[in-house]
Amino acid sequence: MRLLLCGGTGFIGKALTHALLSRGDEVWIVTRKKFVKPDFDTALPHPQYVTWAEWSADPERLNGIDGIVNLTGESINQRWTDNAKERILSSRIEAANRIADNLKRMDSPPRVVVNASGISLYGHSGDRVFDESSPVMPADFLGTTVVKWEAAADEIPAQRLVKLRIGLVCARNGGAFSLIRLPYRLFGGGRIGDGKQGLPWIHLQDMVSLILFCLDNPSISGPVNAVAPDPVSNDEFGRILGRVTNRPHWFPVPAFMLKSLLGEMSTLVVTGQKALPRKLLDHGYVFAFPKLEEALRDITR
Image 1 (tube, one colour):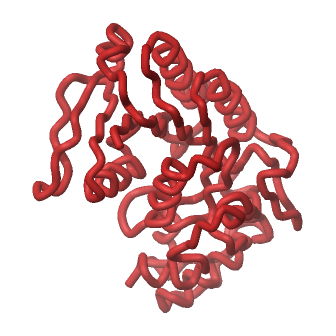
Image 2: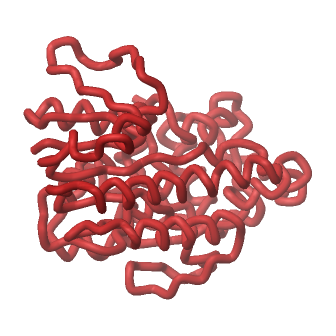
Image 3: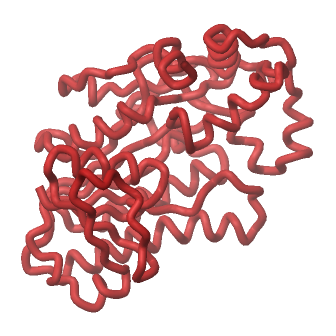
């Protein structure tokens, strides 16, 4: 396949690029700047690069691309000032809009677009467990952002559009997991708030594999929960992390303390969702790491 990656130099994008190149796909990466230093296994073919400006100026240069994966978006791991919130939202909307505009001007546009999304659009779960048929009920800034992001993605004129509702992606290096693990390294881990809030998670290996699965499987479209089939609470996640790393899970962090330190961004950890990847399971996807304990043992060994 010939594939175009938007956000291909990020945390998930690098792992996905390596997987695509390893199986013999031709990879194009859309970047903001002209020069990008190669950061991939030298034994593999290197990806090719094109800037957003170059693609917009000449959309037909990428005629014949089989699919697009859009992972573009400003990091949410920052204090949510008004300016930061505007960047978080606009980076996602603008990328989807540019893809939609370019595809409309291509003679031979790709058949499939896999667009990143987020699990937070379901709202705060409590005891409920969400799947793709659950109603969309955003309860905070991030949930509202994801709703607008998916609405922008819906304007992309692809034969098949997949919207990946992604949870916490766990990996040995990179992503937010290292921040979650840090208190346990310092023997200060514990539940956050009451610990009952859901913490949807997925191993990076499964994150990459399910993207390939969605690209290759023509029967999958619409929303897809990109989470493992083992919904856990914040407290359960911490207890398992403590057990596999031989660290105590004993120091609770009050919600009001995080709110005072992080402001509105604290909703990332004091609220949450429990979700199931119903569509992936129904289509036969087999998780390499379906259970949290085995995933954390692999990451922290």
